[in-house]
Image (cartoon, rainbow, N blue to C red; front, side, top):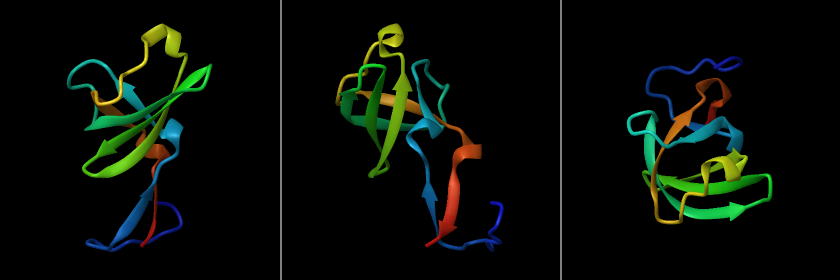
Length: 90
């Protein structure tokens, strides 16, 4: 992580913007799996709250008419764009 020199085993917090991950609809295409706890239609996008290992993540998906909206309670895979993941000291 630029600007930080973390030693192995250091406790950090991860910060991920909603556009830093995407829902993957094909099996095995994501890096983590979670459950949709909330899906909010925003007109040109859908904002999902996806709970992964007890941690809620916000994910924003553009053009919902093209892919449809994942129902609350659905299990999804997420692809995390690691270049958008920021680590900060805890």
